[in-house]
Image 1 (cartoon, rainbow, N blue to C red):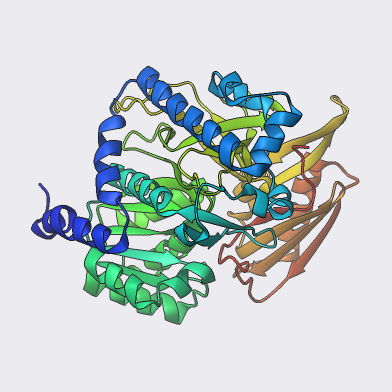
Image 2: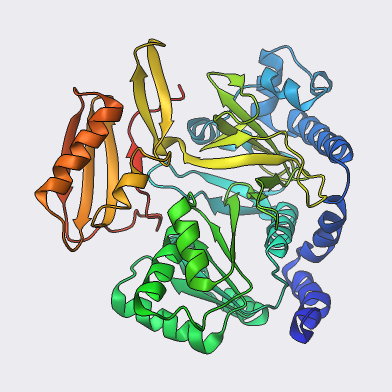
Length: 460
């Protein structure tokens, strides 16, 4: 049963808010809520129709893509399927910087474009979006939240660490929007015991129906709740995590603390909503009406269940199209069919950023291969069970790893020896391992608490 406020907010306040902002999230939501139940075949037809419209527009109005097509002796009609996208080049962040003006559609006045900045650390890009794209991506985002049981107007508490987003939430418009939607956004960039206590007490008063946030931030809140014995009264409908890899230990701890299911969501500033878990938790439904995802390794599409770099084609941004954009993430495609009945295609998992994969030289293959640091037994599984409060692993080169860690109670030299021997068992005796103990590990400038950073790209 829909709560009275949620019904009023969804059917009256949201359309009014859309009208004042010049967006059409309300209209787009109605479309996407219907199309998710189409068959996979029909969704693929819709996706291809949207892709062809984008390619025609890009060829006609975007100098960069007109040049790319002509250099390859191609026309938009030569792209007859999603697989044919491989005929076009990959768009990197460096390409966006070098060709910034030529990527902007001449079919849009600058006044109709909204400036944006991507997330990430040290590799950010500037770009433009349109109000139409914003409407579609918000509609897909809230559709995904709906799979977790969220309804517009439900009380929601958000733990967020991005300085860019937190600054935006200080504006009068954002404050009004948050009040309308009954959302409280809390700064999780620094989470000391004092701050955690304050936030948990606020949660107790506010009684959120939904908790959202950075995976690591919600995990730290959940860990604090369990340690202090506060888990007997905090029971939201669901927790929605995003922005970072949802490690198994994060999911289990959050579910124990909040007594509800965790739904993982995958999105980006460049594209908006990309994929999310539904109630079946058998993978991530791709927002195929809005995006095309490719999974590639060494220039070739990978098979179902194999890891590949994710390339994204945004089907809704006609103002500054991104076609085959290398977003810097790694995932696994899936050919499974979800029992929920939605026809939206699945991706098996989000493996993390490219920089979160260790580069390991395989002697048998004679080349460098990527190894997920979230794989059981390698790093996370061991470090999580040692008396270590926090850790960050940095791969400097193929033969050097630096571990920064905060010691926990009971840590001894024997733990250090065990850790070094364990790593060498996987990476070889020649690996150089430096362990640096610190009092505190601050988040990255993005607000994320990334546990592994590699300076070697194993997918190239």
